[in-house]
Length: 349
Ligand SMILES: C[S@@+](CC[C@H](N)C(=O)[O-])C[C@H]1O[C@@H](n2cnc3c(N)ncnc32)[C@H](O)[C@@H]1O
Image (cartoon, rainbow, N blue to C red; front, side, top):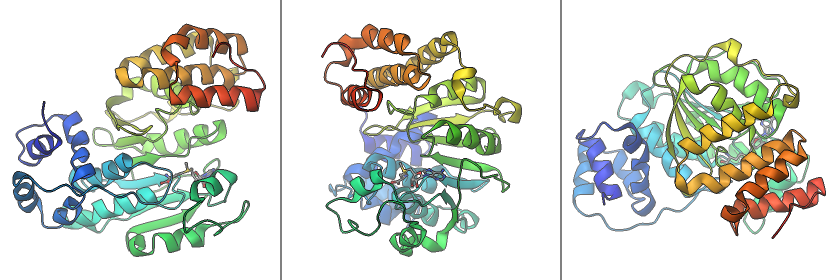
């Protein structure tokens, strides 16, 4: 079996041009976090270090709602794959775990002009109860209370990276994007229909054809089921690249310009999405995500029907996958959601 070091070396030495491997080589950073430092020395230094059977220095996460793998991916991408032909855009940042990772990468990028680029960060910066839960037990606990605007706290948390971040407080349900085309779009904000509709409209057509990368942070999460239908509707414009292991993220490459007239969905989506479309979209999605991600996509399939308030279809879909679901973390969350929020317990255990 090829090791993560071999995959990274094959990419750096250009003995492999495999797109998936290029995007999966971030895994080398998980056990060899010191390579972040070697990035600054350039390709030859990095290759030499990788060839020397480097010691293990496990990566430590930045505070936030993302995993080490997502952070490592964003850093790897911005160092080695980002060309600087378009913007790096972050939608939904919380305390900046991915801002820091992307800025680390941009700063180490081998192209001088690309190193001058800033990460464009957009967020509402309104503190909610989920955020309170995320910082509980950390030094950030008590920093804000529900309803506080936290843009200044965010800026403080990324102070050492802020020279490479262009931070905008924006409500992405209404915001109109009018900047340069986008080469890397990190989306961690498609949390409800109005956000899905406007993010799709404003940012997807801005992706650079051929180069544009869409990092869908919630593609492999049971709740944000809308994104499966949206990607299915746009399947002729994107190539699936890879899931990011140990996370809910999935990477797509934009193969041709996304026509704005395909990005005009209107909320509520239940008026426009038929059961037949849902079935086709989830069948397609299950075909691209790999064996290890079937249960979470099946859970999203159930959740899609819940979002559309089609309870019979939700239950039938749940029953169809019940055996595969046993004990899966997404399904535990899904069941809790049905019980607490919808007061409609799902059948069985
Ligand atoms: C899951 S969190 C992002 C986590 C982040 N990527 C990290 O690194 O930890 C979702 C983010 O979406 C933002 N958000 C929620 N509603 C929004 C809106 N209407 N407009 C802009 N941002 C919004 C929240 O403030 C929050 O920072």
